Image (cartoon, rainbow, N blue to C red; front, side):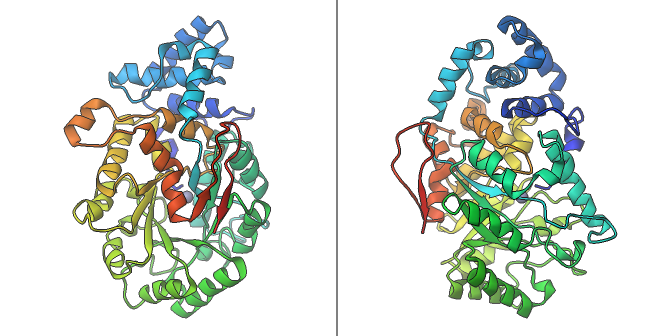
Length: 440
Ligand SMILES: [Zn+2]
């Protein structure tokens, strides 16, 4: 993640001392946006109707349903599939939640992180000022999302507790952070520490390699890539085209600097290559967050899959055009990490346009679920919000977007990713049980 939520959510508290339920996490985020005050009035009314204190109400599934209902009412558009009774009747919300869960049981979170390393981040010692800015951003976000110690809580242990045990996530794909120039010559999250996630939950996680930029030397980059595959058995790559080197960035379609990396991926059997696209945050150059370099590589390496993380937001239209106008393409994918979370609560029209554009132009088989947790704490509120989210009819009619039907949601949540990552979804009809998956 990589988006300063505090600029958009003025009422969002930077730190909370008491533990939060996932519903409360979601509600507090709704309340922090520009509709916060009006949503708050609705919550008061529903809490009174439910005969519980406001404080307790916000922790419940009814409180979360009430916030979504309030957005429908305030905007006059139906963004969330939520019934009036859910906002004050625990039984109604439970029934609806179970109904919404059916069919979207298999959830692959394409975008997860740990964000702590054993020697920490100490400015002036092993972290530059720019590097610290990013740590601080994530620290604030974590604290606001119910992690009392911010980044210090984004550990391997909590990855398991929050994402694998604490949410409906079936499989988590974890993403690396590099930028070693800003972190004392060592990746922000070194692969040997990240690999502990894979060792602890081998059947429920997929590990991506990263922290590679040819600006650190092409030879060294190729050697590290080989080492990641041989020593750590990575399943794919998640890279950044902006970087912390003096050159500040590079492009995937650079035939001299980048094509040797893709040729090496081919040789090593890596097929899925992702890149942070969009969310041009903090110290990095926005130009490298554009997806234009996917155009050439998608054609020149048709046997590799190219995944735009964050959906290129706010440049999702550029990304979508790479397939919208070239429908023959079959190797372009995207995922929703941070983009969905950051827009669904206070910019629902924008959220609907992003999803609608991606689903219409990239296609319903190419959009994948991602939350960017544990940076956002427990991802459950995002999952619940997506289960309820729909594109208002006016936008469907006016833009030709496909609707987010349960079938489309099931694809986005897990079926598309299971094809891409060769996950075999074992038939499992028990709603409460964790679907078993095998990575091949
Ligand atoms: Zn991320």
